[in-house]
Image 1 (cartoon, helix red, strand yellow):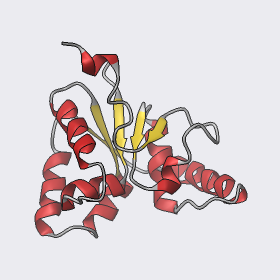
Image 2 (cartoon, helix red, strand yellow):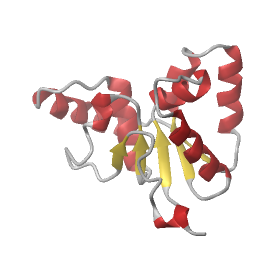
Image 3 (cartoon, one colour):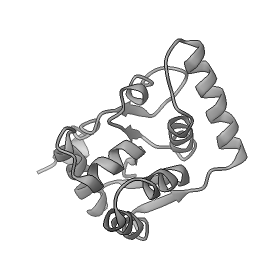
Image 4 (tube, helix red, strand yellow):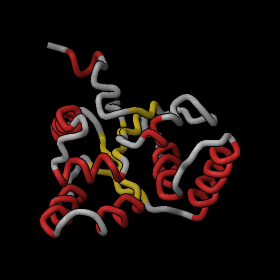
Amino acid sequence: MPPRVCFDTNAWISILNQESHVDLDSLMLWTGKIQDGQATLLVPAIVSTEVGAGPDEAGIRQFENALKQPYVEQIDITHSIGLRAGKLRRQVLDHGWKLKTPDAMVVIAAETFRANFILSTDKDVIRLDGNFGLRAKIGPPNTGLDLPLFNQG
């Protein structure tokens, strides 16, 4: 079964705006793997909300077109996901860290839909890796690209 990957909003905005201060090459490598059917892309509805307010109209159209592709699985945000995201956010805040509500919703939605990887350019999201009972590998854009599946000749 191909890996399931979720780009958080920051990763999407970086792609759509072609931001040079992030590891855009790795994000584009992931995008290629996804388009080739080597991975499934999970897109929580909250990402759509944030992207809709982010890039220019051309970027929004590019995002909307991506959502129509067969390798994309759109995730609706349910009350259960919202409640679990709130609990995660409280745990993180109690730990003395920061985590915005939309980021908590992305992480929990991705976890709920069995993401193997959650990719972000946000240090507050990346530091969740291995903490708070989360099982997906959470990391920067190059996370997971070393999978044997991707390195077969």
